[in-house]
Image (cartoon, rainbow, N blue to C red; front, side, top):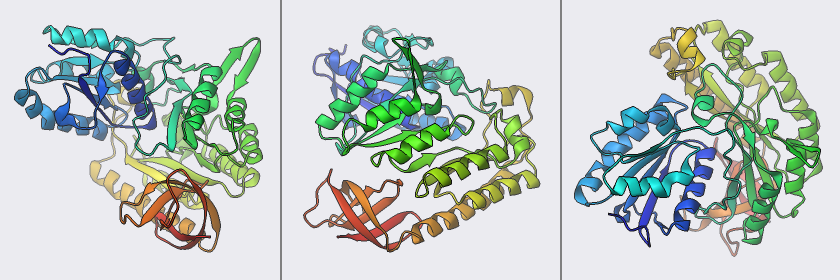
Amino acid sequence: MISKVSKKVYIETYGCQMNVADSEVVASILTDSGFKITDKINEAELILINTCSIRENAEQRVWGRLDSISHLKKRKAGVVVGVIGCMAERLKEKLLETDKLVDIVVGPDAYRELPSLITEAESGHKGVNVLLSREETYADISPVRMDLNGVTAFISIMRGCNNMCSYCVVPYVRGAERSLNYESIIHEAVDLFNSGYREVTLIGQNVDSYTLESDGKKIDFPMLLEMVAKINPKLRVRFSTSHPKDISDELLETMARHENICKHVHLPAQSGSSRILKLMNREYTREWYMDRISAIRKIIPDCAVSTDMITGFCTETDEDHKESLTLMEWAGFDFSYMFKYSERPGTKAARKYKDDVSDEVKSLRLNDIIALQSGLSAKSKKADIGKVYEVLVEGISKRSPDQLYGRNSQNKVVVFPKGDTKQGDYVNIRIEKSTSATLIGQKI
């Protein structure tokens, strides 16, 4: 049996920023119970895989990972393996039938139960809790930061989602939307700044819908964002993700007022076709989306915009595809996350619509989107040559120990010679050249 005192737990995270934040909550719960976090899987007595179910590919990666670590359990007696997060919620039975490899299955709202579930697994029983909650926010838990740079961190401001996009499994595996107490968010940001962190990203499935009633006063997302920005001008603030139907001029004006609120908006379009957007239940049209982009350009002229695009959704035609391409070109996105549609069991799209676009056509259309975005990204970076940006240094470049990297306010990666600059510094960099993914410059 595992004695929890000083035993080692390895947590591997798949998927989005919310999963990274959840892993840090899990790490806090377990360290409070006596576990020690390790980044070496071979040393661990407890292995937790934090999973994502948003796309089929994400789930396939987890199945492959479980296969690859099966030898660890066979080689080292007593190793406990757990699957936590969205995939645990969606595929409980299948996970428990996986050649007796998985001992613990825990959904996103049941992490507090992990210590007792580990005890169950030690005694030879499967530890399972995938119940969703309408109240759980983990607001009282101080996350154990698992990042290595000590400069940037995520802060969850809400859990769950009320948007029932027809292709999306999130509401089913993460439950209804609930906002964290703004005081706990501010406290967490202050603690991070005092610990040396210089950038926080406020995260939620739809941050624009953050709302909290406190002492008869309604706190919305622009108000929360401003509170965090006012902690210290040396604390950069980012946020993700905004929903096109909810992003307001008030939010954009708040961004424009505060220099330390980063000038970058991630605004998932998903499609450029109003017909497809309606089938997706996105609750906006192509024209509405374009209006929101125009507002960003007007209120924050130097703001970068990134997006998500799905190609090959049910009934998508060549004309729908062309509308996605023309929207991307018109918006001039700095960066995009681009995917082929994959049907998720249990969603409205899976129940109501036929996945009738062939994989071959999806692949061809995805290649079109990737090629277009590659050109847009290169154009965006090329336009930055000659400009000077303040860059927050995050670490040593992967390509050379003599170079550092960081990001500017627009979320673009900047690489430059190390010199006497160190991690966590703000430096002014003149951009001298670029690639489609990176700006390259010199300190001034």
